[in-house]
Image (cartoon, rainbow, N blue to C red):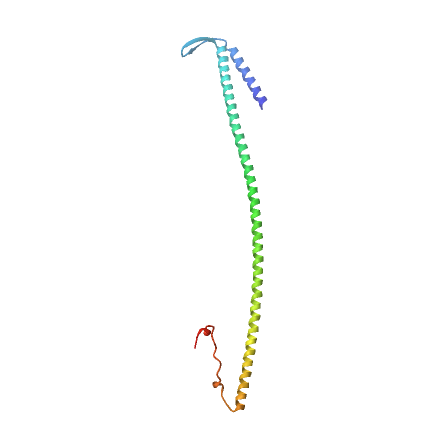
Length: 186
């Protein structure tokens, strides 16, 4: 690409030079503060040279401007890459911390579950124990009720044998005492 541009510039320079050589007449050039007589050849070459110098300075300015712009873009790109890397590192740290928290939560949940299962088993055992105690107490009450009936029958038979035919209505049952009855004084 660069070779094509150089070849085109050489062709343009040759064309301008040929044009200047063909036009060899003297012309008057008026400036704001005076006038000068020059050959048309010198005027064409001077204008071309002035245009080339202006274009060279413009090209240099654009090159410097592009270099500064590209340098700032490179710096911005480096800053952005550095920031992306730091954010990725922070993301990895946060993911590791999240994994650690999840593992801790799972361990704590498993521990709580085990404790709840143990407590449930303990409560089941206690409930079974209370049921057994209740069954024993019920059996004892049934036995006591049966014993009471036997004693009452025995008492009735003894009273019949002694000649006191009392009915069940006349049997005096001992008064039941409450918890606070021992405080009462008669």
